Length: 371
Image (cartoon, rainbow, N blue to C red; front, side, top):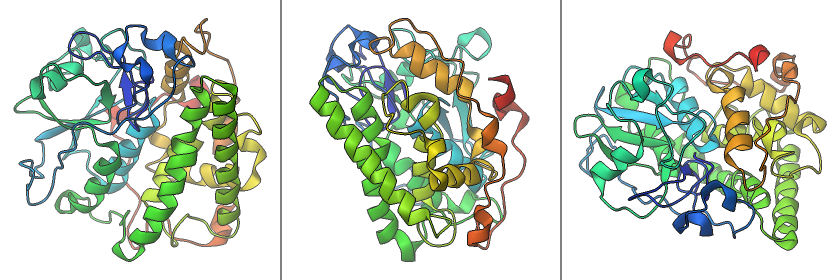
């Protein structure tokens, strides 16, 4: 997610040269700023529109798009700041794909060439050997006019981008990569529940995942009011749904919970203040606050969340709506580890499976007491 410019589900950052789009999120966020040179300062001044993912090839078990599932062949590129990319981080952990699908984490702060690997020695990704994610986009398609977005999966042998389809990536990890899942991996997209999961996810995407961006990047009072009203109406609906059930669909964690979690975990830290989604804080809704803490404390969720990356990215990159770049000291994060009591509702987080193992040493996030 490069919250720079537009939001397409994935975060696309600002880009220059062959990549002139600006984006925010994972997928391909494109606002009217995409084609301009004003980059981050355009936020809140141009109409918001989330574009479709341009590179929608799929990595499948049968390789029908030319990209077969193969251990070690591909590299997942994410920003820990981005809610769209965070879906892939959670799915990869829950399914135990760490050894099969390597991980590259970008700097939460971009320059005018978008997502960069300045967290790595010499500013290069150690596997791909590139300084900017845009280089993988260029290897796939020169002069591609859109933004550079995460999550992105890159073919390591060729250095080419395979896909930036944030909506499909996690579904394929759950259903096409099964031969490489860890023993005890949960079924995150169970076939009997897919129609219900899809219906629930559609409303969450439209009004919550995308809704916070529509509110935050609104350029008129009317657009902001419409987005904010729809956002909280949907949050109220979801809260009512979760009042007597532990998870959104069925009695186990599914793709729907992952997609809701990645927005809720950022809500009080950035969306409440930075995006003016401030009818109330998440901590003021007893059901949603308990639900998101339950997931946060579940292995595979909270251990992928880096509040330091999240806060610095939103407040320092979106200079159009936060021109000073000041990062707030709050909110207090200590509540994330307090008891939630959601286990009283029953449910089996991993179904017939088991929790993922410990986080790899090289993938640990900043502890919340150090943010």
